Length: 452
Image (cartoon, rainbow, N blue to C red; front, side):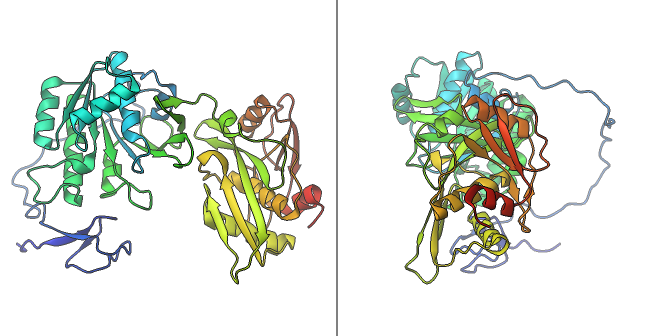
């Protein structure tokens, strides 16, 4: 049998190395390798046969899992309709973004609706959590509170209390005495998550785990944690804005990419029932460099304002600054405008921003981004009653996108009367909306800005 050897694991990406090196070969991070003892002595020979497992066919009809409502509509939407018993949920977000506030409010709301809740804090004392509860007006909520990091004691308590929901804040602070490494290490996080998820499935307890994130916005620790749990939620937002987005990136019991919108107030987080109206609330009269994008987040249509500024650059290499959108997508759109439409951007700085702290990842935003950039460059305002959506290909063609009718209905509801969409889109008849379909970017530029 081969002798066990110590490995060095990267705390940023989880890659293993046989010896310590300054730079991780997996992700390129510096000084992130920690020494860890092996978890086991290796595979052992099977001395006897295992039992045969029960097999079923694909046509087997299983009942839909029961759900418990929190009373917070935006949270229930992201969870897929409510909390599923025996499910494991991982919530990540930047420090100070409001994760603990959101989950304390969620625990109080679930408890009010008949779910026995247990809140375990590994980062704060019980007194600190009680002070937050007092500030949020939740002191009368029937939530059991504990402050502990020893996972063995936590599991014993959960087995005794048998709550319907347990919140662990956070998984990086949990310590399992069977693993010979420090809390927060890859081995500790992986083992602690495995124990908690196994307990949730065995005892029928729903568990919500809070996870720290790295500087890249990914949940810290091994990525296997995200595979273990049933649902992964990210709590996003810009510190300069009061809006917060709860986004589902994985959900075994509902649609992924669903979002819930909250507003941070002095009394905690309040849900936003009409995000489109909120994101467009500060939009004044039509100005150059502004375009309204009719997007889809999960199953919900959301209208956001995309703002652009184009100015002469004093630098040899012009700047491309983006907030709320992929910077690579902006570079691609500018390249298509230059090569297919003959519109130069050499010597021009381009600044792009999605208003309200929203982050847009949908390719359908390409046309609105191009419109905002051209509007700023030509100093021509886009008509204020117009929304845009469509994907731009590298050839300059406009490609149709899905859920066109839902986008148009949301725009009409907010008072928009005109939409620009790619030709070939499945356009339904929406009362009060006039749709102008365009085949390629050159036609769009020529009609809207008299160029191309």
